[in-house]
Length: 295
Image 1 (cartoon, rainbow, N blue to C red):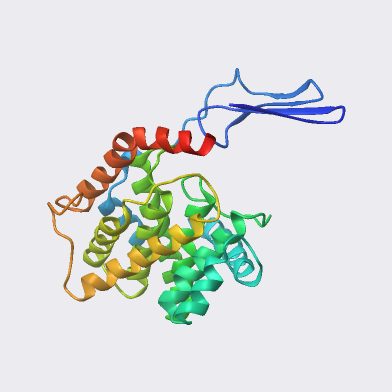
Image 2: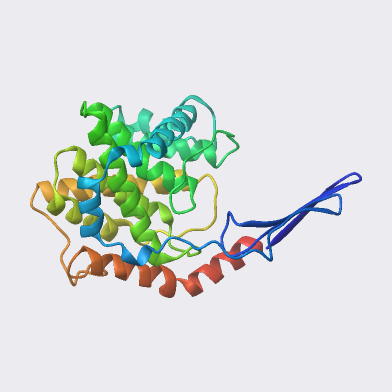
């Protein structure tokens, strides 16, 4: 994909290939200043090795020093834009509306702060965000609710780091099956992943975490992606709430069982179904949404 812009007597163009952030050519005033088209393609990480058990094992055993720098950046950047979204006037102000409507309980703050980060990002705020699966909104969604709960529960920093690891990797795992472009809303996978991180902060083990994710995915997997805009914040709020509800369902000995809709036997098979839904089932949906948007 190439984009060219003009202003008075100046011109600039940028070309990307393969994925959103892979800039291979930059041209300014008809002079080529970057040309990586002939370079070998950067090998992307193999996500086929991911499974929920592997993620859980890594979260429990990882040396935090190996990931601390990245997670510290995520904490700093994503909370900063969430706070800015609450303070400022961005988009539909979903975050601040939720706080006015539902109060200041932690389960409200978790979804409101995540929504506020998206309010700001989707509507002109220039603050940086640490992404997940190529998406700023997904990066906000899988981190901010976990951080809100970590603070509320007075968790130590190592527990928060591990909860963020769990949430980020779970979001990547779910999104990997869906693919880069889909009509399946990425906030859904990130919200379910945030539920996993929240369950971990409460002392939950593998059983709590896998049931939380499955329950959350069963609730909100019908949300479609129709572009980056103000309503993303509301979709994020709904998805984070589904993650929280999914956890409390398990605490109350409730769950969505295999055979109920897209829920399959076990978390990995359910996530596989989500991938099939997003990558294959929504191909035509994606085309129709694009047709509607460009009419």
